[in-house]
Image: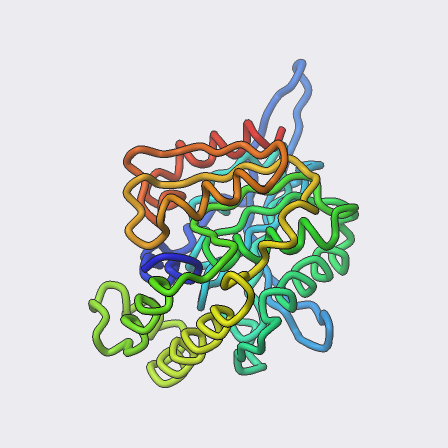
Length: 289
């Protein structure tokens, strides 16, 4: 289906275990940097948010998952393989998702803005003064809003599978995935393992209603008026075989985010950062540096 949230159909990779440390010898001197993936919870805006963290680099990066997503389900190859000498990588579970439960996830009209504030406040609570954002699907929308509303905190952003509006076609396709019992077992299984069937089913239905309500905004806008306020460098990536996000969505973002870069991956689908993890990671690292 087009638009944000399609990430839930592709959560097939689990977090890989990493060795506790790696060693380099720059200029003949030994240097240690952590490759362990640690996890924790921290109270942010009255919610105990779960996050994972790895790397010791000076450049902090927050990974933002899609609908019903978490760091563990959405970003295994990034937590495992992004350069941990150059970057400190944080992946969060938004409120009501992953291990950031309670609360039960809900979808008021400003749920994307709420997620953006939670994400930025989480990084502040972790003592990162400035950081970059990598957002997939719904997480990409959250990243766009955060970059526009908190420009003094955001270094660079990378988004893929994201959209700034909801079209009538999108709403039809959202409703096509409302009933999770009709999903393939491969798509359903990781969600049931994470949440149990009842929470998974009810939250998916609530998400469909929550994002569909944004169709009633002017032009079906999710964050269209905010795009001109994004001043940081922005990379938009689009898989040319993405069945869920039409090409006009990334093209709209590119047109309305001044100075942004738009990169097409010819064989990429919605889960391009998982399917082509090595290519994706290298591209993102080059952009962030």
